Length: 426
Image (cartoon, rainbow, N blue to C red; front, side, top):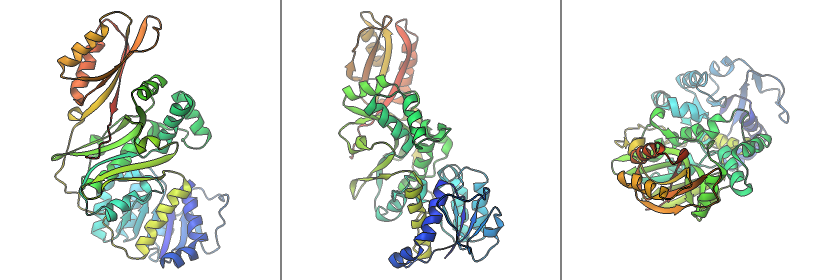
C-alpha cells in the first residue's frame, strides 16, 4: 500500500523513520506492505536523524499526494482545525484512506469527516489521537465491542499529569512544575490547551463516540484545567486520603450520560492515582468484562508513531473497522448543572468562633451534607483555611451555596471547588 505523509514534525519524523527503517520487519511480522512514497511539509529543511531515500519525494506541494492515484492512504499529522479539515475532506473525496492523530479536529468537526468517509467507502482511523501509544481506540472498536460501557475514567494528558506529579511528589508550585515540564519537552511553549483541560476534553469526546455511540457537540462538554490548583489543595487532599489528577469522566446514568473533564480528588489507593509524570491511563467498566485499565506512554514521537503505523497496517490488510459508525445513541447529555459529585470545598475565612456552623447552615439549606471536615494551621493575617468534603450533591446546588457563602462577612477570599471521584466500578 502506497502512503503519503503530511507533516514532518516530531511525530511525523518518527512515522517516516518507522516506515522506512522497519518496512521489511513490519512485512515479515504482519504481511502488510507499507510503501512511503511522498512526504509533504511546508519546511523542506533536512531533518536530523532522518535520511530519505532518493525514491521518496519530499515536497511542499500537497498535490503530490492528492493528485497521485497510486497513493492509497494519507497520514495527516499537522494538527489544528484548518487547513487540516480541508485536507481530510479532499483525501476522503479522492477515496484515499486517512490516518490522523488530530484529536482537536475530530472532536470539533468529526461528524462531517466520519460521514464523508462512510460515503466514500474508505477508512478514517485515529488510534494515535488519544493516549499516544496505548491502543485504546482499537480496544473499544474490537475487544470491548460486545460490552455495554457503563463508565470510563482517564488520565489522558501527559503535560498536566507531569505537572501534578511534580507538585504532589516534590512540593513544587504550578508555575515551577510548568517550567520544569517545558525544560524537559513535556509542555509546549504555549501550554494553554494542555493545562486548561481543552486537550483532555477533545480526547474525551472521541472516546465517548466509541464507548457510548454518542456524538457530543464539543460546546456541550464541560471542562476545567489545573492552573488554579495550589499546594494547599494537594496537601489537604492527601490528608483526606486522595490524590489530585486531571481526570476525563464519562458515566452512564439511566438514559443519560455525564461527560466532563476537570481536576478531581481520587482515592490514593486506586491504580489511577499511581499514574505518574507523562504516562496516561484509562479505566473502563463494561457490563461483561467489569473494570479494566489501559496504561502506557501517552505522548511523544515514538509511542504515537506506533499507533499511526498500526492503523496503516490494519488498512493494508483490509481489516474491517468499526470506528466509523452512525452515532445514533439516544443517550441525552446531562448538563453541567445537573451533574452529581462529591465535592472538596476550601474556604479561607476569618478566624473567629461560629464560622464553621454558619458554613454548615448554608450548605444544609441547599441540601448538601458534609462527610468530612479539616481545619488546620495557625491563622495567617487573621484567616484560616476550612476544608469540607461533601456527600454526593447536585452541582447547581453546590454553586448556589458557594455564591451565598461568598457574600458572608467572614470570607477572606473565594472558595475553591474540586470534584471528588470515588472511581466506583459498580
